Image 1 (cartoon, rainbow, N blue to C red):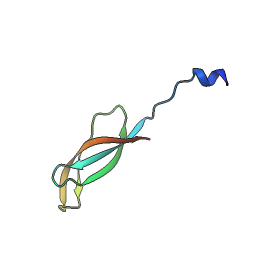
Image 2: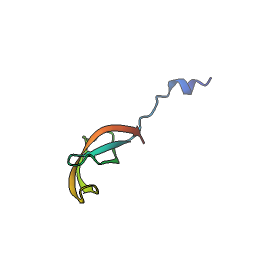
Image 3: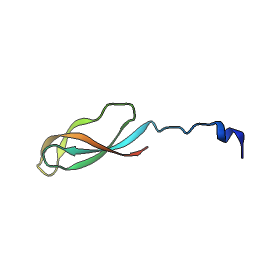
Length: 64
């Protein structure tokens, strides 16, 4: 085994994929945000109610 492999730390990803849920209808979308940023809260078009609604971050899906 190489010594360099032992000494190197595992690098964390810069971005993460998160799931956002509509506060009105429960429709969900996935977006990518920076790891160090605050939780997302955006206004997007909701296809279930055919209007804009607020989406809030629910959970982390994976690292990118």
